[in-house]
Length: 476
Image 1 (cartoon, helix red, strand yellow):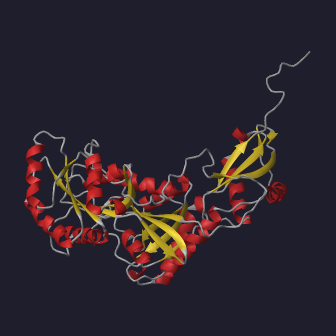
Image 2 (tube, rainbow, N blue to C red):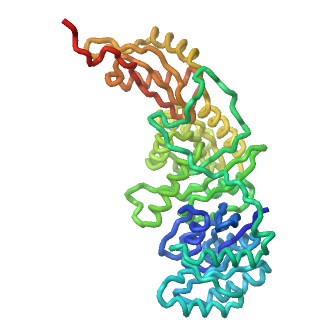
């Protein structure tokens, strides 16, 4: 059985750096600015032969409960309650601060076993801060450098001592997180048998990223879906910084939800921290299968919304639109008709995209949103046999054959589906470079309609068969 470790401490003592060191990846954003981390993040971690879950938390601050630091502290208190062991982290370089003593008292009252971690111990003058840490009464401080990986063997021994060998050296839990490999022109996953049309597997876990502009209600939407205050929310724009993953079960299906930072126009993103947040959000999009684009129904389809949607489609992810804050709309019927018309007109590259009206505040429309997500995921995974495709192609060529270019008619020989997730098709034709884009779009739209593939990106790759006589000199 594994155990959970919460990393606690005041802002800017290196909690996220230690978290990244333990999980072996740069998952949490790290910057010199105090208070970068706001939400709590959980991930599988490893410390030599110890396998456990580690929780990264926001810096513990003494503030009123209604303020942003106060709401961040509530998230940290939840982490303390969930944890089996606490890494109370102090900054050995700067020594003890009044807040360290206050929060040490909070940790002591929790009754959980504690390991006192003195971070930044590699710095000059850190010895004084290390000796000072004894004053907290939490046992021997373990000098470490999370940045450089120093002191990890001592930290491992301290964990075993705090929990006991039987608990600390438990079975390794399986980590289901893994990167989705990048691929070629068609992006998706290879199809082994082009003639097979396997049934959709609704038991597989599903990865969903929630994206949009700042203050659109992304974190509130995830909290409403899972039914708990898991993510930090509030009236302030740009609260979320890290991409936080949340495990959830919907109607018996395992789902991993990724909350992302709001994405503003590139020209407005000046601060390094915001750039890191946006990059983290883009990674979450590439890692996801379905991307829910949260639009504020009171100001939908701004230029940035369309750019986000276009980015998702170019990445080959399956988009679903959620018009949030629907409870603030006075004329819902009129606006709904207008939004549907705008969706079709402004996003032609994903014709038939699923768009649902929701209210994260009241919980309205959430089941309908998830049903649209599953429907879109089915289409994104769909396969069409080569036989069906070529029967469709015969009808298309008879109705509207390819144009003649430079006096020579283009010939299309056959079409086959080479990939799924998203659907990718290979069209064998005589001169791929001469094929007009307008005809490729016609093929894509006809295929989308004929095989019922609304709202997902479709890839078309043009290929020509090798000419066995090319390059040979003509014999006289």
